[in-house]
Length: 137
Image (tube, rainbow, N blue to C red; front, top):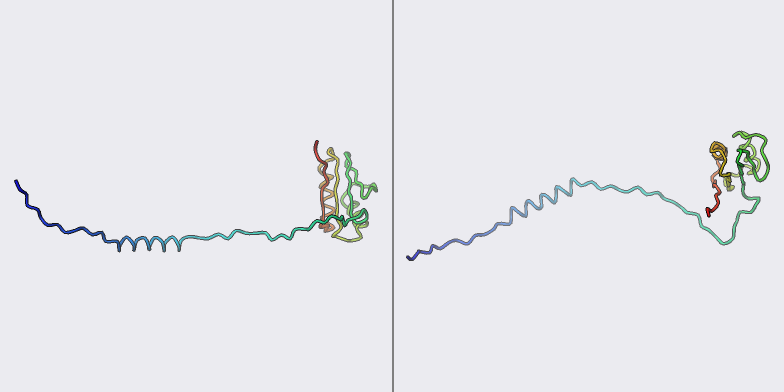
């Protein structure tokens, strides 16, 4: 048996609708995408030098012993409240809010005493406050 071969047309794949769909998807994703701008904090960090510029008279040391007694530059305060500590800090600093303040507390000091010291410094607007610690062995 001999089959008759029929002449078939060649098949073509029309890419135009495919390209149209791809462009529509691209436009859809471009329009519907939201971009978030990450917030950044602008910081101006201090520079350190080899020469310490703060002398003993240019800083305030607040020492709190284990029983919660306050000492400002090695002078014991009569009362352990915010008002007396604030008055002592104002007297020692002379109203200078930029003077460094260091709080050194005993490990057994009540937490409230440290909060009182920080509160007194904050009420005076002291800008340079630090808490001194020691290195653990």
